[in-house]
Length: 115
Image (cartoon, rainbow, N blue to C red):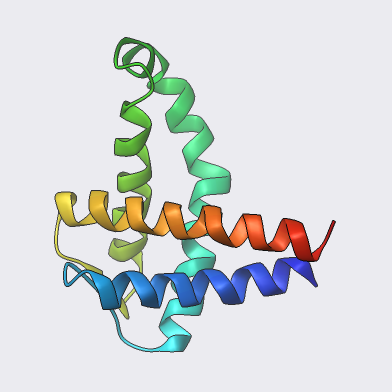
């Protein structure tokens, strides 16, 4: 149940990102649901590999390079999907940052609802 609620709230967060920032466009709620799923899958499968491969750069930048990895995952999802569009790399960086902050809020709320 928690996973389904998190998926729905992540789709709402993606729509919120598109509403707040014009560099990210989502065609519909269905597109947001699919995009949230794809972003989650990319973050679960591809992100750990990229984090390990870029570990030296991440250490040198004191962890700031992880923002670039998050932006790349966001941008990759827009490249895969049709109803989800990101204007470019910097739009992906800002969109991923807003989406991550909203994701932290979602995780905090779900931790209170499902202890």
